Image 1 (cartoon, helix red, strand yellow):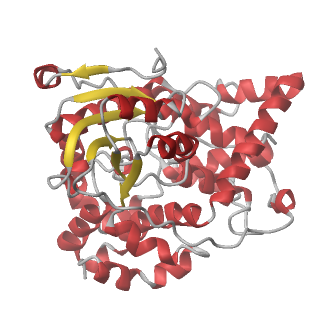
Image 2: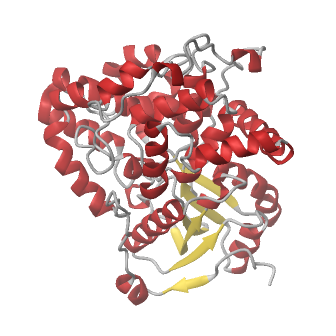
Image 3: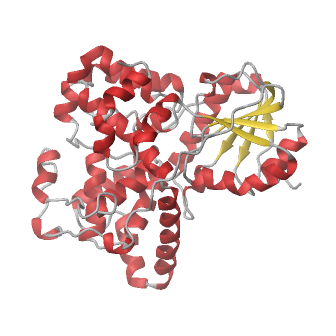
Amino acid sequence: STLRHFSLSPTSKKERETMSLDYKNPQHFVPTRAAGAAALEAFTPNMGKNYADGRNFDRGAGQHRDVSMLSPYLRRRLVLEKDVVATALRTHGAESAEKFVQEVIWRGYFKGWLERRPIIWDLFKQGLNRDLAALDRDRSLRRAVEAAEAGQTGLDYFDSWVEELVDTGYLHNHARMWFASIWIFSLELPWRLGADFFFRHLVDGDPASNTLGWRWVAGLHTRGKPYHAQAWNIAKFTNNRFSPRPADLAEIVEGLNGEESDGLPSVSPLRTPEVPIPRRPTILLITEEDCRPEDFEVSGLNLIGCATLASSHLRSPRAVSPLVKEFEHGALADAALRSNLDRTELRAGLPADLAAWASHIGATQIATPFIPTGPLRDWVLQAQSALDEAGIALVEWRRDWDEAIWPYATAGFFKVKKKIPAILHSIGLA
């Protein structure tokens, strides 16, 4: 069959209802909307002063009580940023919830920043391919990277973070910053290989947050301001679980802005998605970019089917963690169950097969929540010519949260921060 790269196994309603969604993750990330709502409710009392005072402390695997750990759910929009911010404001008020709200909006800023500069994602992919080629050629580099990825550097704090990341699919945000800084400036390893290691293992891995977070540490996002991991800071914010020797860490760090001597690219206009046409035979396509299709106007569409598209394997040329794939599978299954439609499970293989499959079942329109810049967007762009040739429109819905934040994501976060009151007002939260 020409559709060999898709898993074309229709799932009946009865099969979906009996499908096990148990997820054996040490951090208890159960990939359902209900589990995300429960996690949100549990953390709500801590969104104010407790978060502001404790958010920088990395207490270790299973002890992250001062941060919400909602990121795997926010990443796939099983929980919505808008709902999280509304909960924080309602429970704690604007002043006490200010830091928590800013951090949630920072995620939207990064998404919008990359959407406005998609060339940065292309440059990352090109650089990663060069780094992987160098890894094949350079035995010394390969040994150093393998030791770092195996948690065998001899730096107990770094090796502990590797173990937590690989075993649980999660790291505290402060640990992510320390890890990236040590990888780049102390171990002197290529930053893109470190970003790729994170992206392959983080259950909440996001192309914007991950790529731009590593660029920020490297001094490429905010030029000339790299992040410096220091022994005293690690000791303080791990409550002395670790006591790094200053001599093991880079004494002076300099940004890698020499890698991109031309500076940052200019800002692109936001892409305006086409909207669905009610009469056309339509497939509802669910991806891990947004697992809440029920939030959109689907009742007026001529739906002839529903499909989930597994794509987490596209994150890297290297093997992606089973934890990431399992969470994606569970989240997609949960979303399809809530859609109350018989579904077909698809896996992103040959891009042209999407048009062949849609034509086979008689669809002339594929409707999906917005797919932003990243590996799945790349795949969809490769599928576009075959869709056009088959007369199949790919249409998207974009959320008001993104519409409110992304226009301001043109420079540093400070510009967005100044606009937070206006952003919240525009979406009915102030």
